[in-house]
Structure formats: structure tokens, C-alpha cells
Length: 316
Image (cartoon, rainbow, N blue to C red):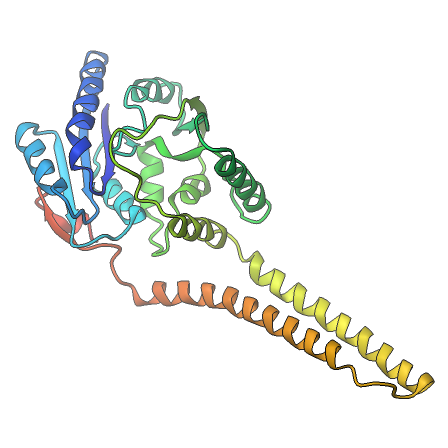
């Protein structure tokens, strides 16, 4: 069995060498079991010497395939490129910063041998701050009440995928991708095991609070239309409240006459309704924007450099 290890990279020049040594060691352990390994690296428009390091690795190891983007297109595009570039019977997706322990690959391969199409590594939140842990739990609890697939807290992109799962994911050509949801959507027999969260080997994560917020919104909006349905229900509820309030005002005027102008009430209602309208327009705008990006049909990424001869395999 050929196993492709796909690792997106962004400004990872200081850790790439150690990462490759670690996965090479795993490859040596898998070789006696009859498994060959292919290394697939995707440079997501790094600003450091990541591409130079990848070229050096490719010169030293014929099993290395790499591609470098013309700019930073995001991790989702890098994952897509890696899956397109991988030719293995199964694919292991992991980060290149050593927060995903390479030694777990062997366990994934063993579980794959039991017939699972997806072997998913779920990290514990050991060592994380209380605020981040509580926020994550609240997010997943909320999202799973809304989306059409189940997203598990602690489950990320670190997983093994069989070839039929990879092919199924590649058939999903949507522009706005949320891989964690796509992996859950395609289904197939899956199993999950836990591992202790590892500390980043070098540098700091490129994820910012804004980036995490946008990623969370992508997960919420990519697999359901319930926010739009909620807007409809909220509009109907406000219309009902307005009808009841109008009837009450008219009734009070007929019984008691017009007393004093309801200035405060009017300002409060107008302000509240304006805020609700802006929120609803924002929700509709999010979905409309996604449609806009889909219909333009632009490629998910552009290639600057690669050691793969047929780049059309990357951009169909």
C-alpha cells in the first residue's frame, strides 16, 4: 500500500527539516510491513525560505512532491492541492509544525487495516487555557445544533483517508471549502482515537482571532441554510409583535384618548428593527457572497513552482 503524507506549509522553514526527518522515520517503520510512503508538501505562499527547503528535500529524497502557490490562498486551498497531488492508496493529512505527532501515523495505518475509510485523531485540550476550551465547547455545541453534519470538538484535519474518500472529497468542487465538514459529509466507515495535544515546535501559530472567527463562520454557513430560515422566523415574530402592539395602541387610544406622544417607544422600536434588519441583510449577504464566488469559477489556487510535471493534475 502506498501512503501519501500531505502537509500544508506556511512559513515553516525552521521546522520543515525536523518534520521530514520524523516522517522519514515513520516511513522506515512502515516499509517492513509492505507499505511505501510518499511525501506531499504544499507551500501556501510562504514569505520565508520554505520553498527553498522544499526544493532541497526533493533533491535529497525522490519520494518528495511539492507545490508552491503564487501567494497565500489559505489552508483549505493547500489541503485541496495536497489531495490532488497525492497518488497513494490512502492519504494522511497533517500539519508540518509537529503539533500532529508523526508517530501516530503507524497507528492510523493499523486501524485502516481493520477496514476503516477514515481514521481520525482527536486531540485533547490539555495545556490550553480555560477561556479557549470553554469557547471551543460552546462553539461546537452551538454549531452541531445547526449544521447538517456533526463536527466533533478536538477533531481537525489530522486523519487518514482511504482513496475512495479522497476521490469523493475531490469530486466536491465548491470554492468555499470547509474540509472538516466535507470529511464528515462524505461519510464512509470511520473511527476516532485521542492523543495528547502537542506544543508547536517552533514559532507562533498564524491563526489570529479574526481568522478563527471567520473559520468558525465558514463552518456554520457551509453546511446549512438555517440562518436564513431563522431570519424568516424572526421577521414573522416581529410582524406578530408589531400587530399586537398596534392593536394595543389603537385600543388604548379609543378608550382613553391620545395622551402623550410615544417618542421613547418609537425611537426604541425603530432602532431595534434597524439593527435586526442589518443583521438579516448581513446573513443574506454572506450567502449571496458565496454564490458570487462560486459562479465566477476561479481556480482555488495558482501554482508558482512544483516538481510535478503535469500541473493540470493540480488545476483541472
